[in-house]
Amino acid sequence: MKIANLLFNIMEKEKVLEILENWNFWKQKQNTGIKRKEYLEKMEKFSKTGQIVSVIGVRRSGKSTLMLQFIEKLFQKGLKPKNTLYVNFEDPRFLGEFSLELLNSIYETYLEYLKPNKKPYIFLDEVQNVPCWEKFVRSLHERKLAYIFVSGSTSKLLSSEFGTVLTGRHLPIEIFPLSFQEFLNFKGIKVQNKIDLVHEKIKIKRMLNEYLKFGGFPQVVLSQEKKEILSAYFNDILTRDVIEKYKIKRMNEIKTLAKYYLTNISSLISFRAVQKFLKIPLYTIERFSEYLCSPYLIFFVKKFAYSLKEQQVNPRKVFSIDVGLRNIVSFNFSQDLGKIYENVVFLEFLKKKKEIYYWKDKKECDFLIKEKGKKIAYQVCTKIEDAGVKQREVAGLFEAMEKFNLKEGVIITQDYEKEEKVEGRKIKYIPLWKWLIKDN
Image (cartoon, rainbow, N blue to C red; front, top):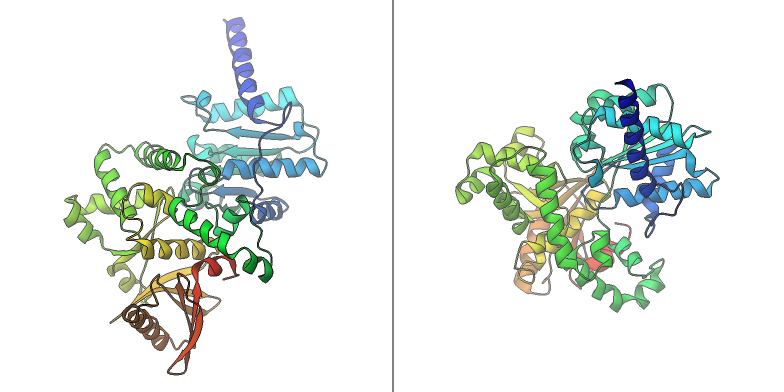
């Protein structure tokens, strides 16, 4: 009986090793794609603290590639491949095997066969697929046996699922689909100064149209089959990160709700109004909405108010993690261009860690941004040259500026650029393509 168990363990280790060899640099190079400098620099900075580094973001945003790029950077500094371990828990060969025992088996197999001669760097990709993974990571970290990096496709890794066991032991990096500047870099367009901006203006504006239509998922940007990939992404996020994760039986209802939110980006939403429109129980709407936020599919922005109760009772604005995902489930691209503009602006604020609100009293202001104790008001509009549109947008912006005593406000436009004074307050108009490239 003991001999049979021993043979079984040997076979299991060989199977694990075979999977690991496919993903690691031990005997072969890996495709590390186009570098995303900002994230790499942050990862390097965090790695020097000795804390666990968590890379979190929507599925297919580039978390795995970032980890591989960082491993490659370690090699450039002289680290040997045998001192690194990368495990991808999205590999279908692991399916049905996820457990704490699997994690221990992987680690033991790595030590036995690779025999690292330095404190190893361990990368656990999409680790949320493994039950009780936190205990394994905490144990390694407390014994100082490895530098540990984990990734996940759920925002809950920032809070309850992660923080309870690893409070004070981890530093998070949120990764998003490509910003417009990164998008241009992927397309081979470098904008490093004002001369580049003027020289590449026509090309940049053409690229913006593509970005507004298909979004910034790295593989989508580099592929010709954009619609097919986006459709697959939407289904994957909904199925694997929502329906399977939360064991949802009312699949049609949550798909309908997801499509409703994506179709109505940049719009004010109340759960009660959604409930009446979709004929789904209010409790279900609230619960499903939280589930859709967890994998970074959608976001809600609250109205600015000093009272938390007022924030809660007012409608929220809904936004998508990527306008390409939104467009793949909607058929109104040209009619909704203004809403798409607004969603892109929201994503830029989100990536830059701004505190984001909207403002509404008699009129509406699209964004009220809090940063370093200051507030900045923004409107987003495509057809500002239309006198009636301009009057409405300026009125909404100006009301927010008066309310919060702001000397300047910004209106992001399609192609209109100017500065005006209205009753002693400055309003700056700037085209979206230029605003996305400048340090906003």
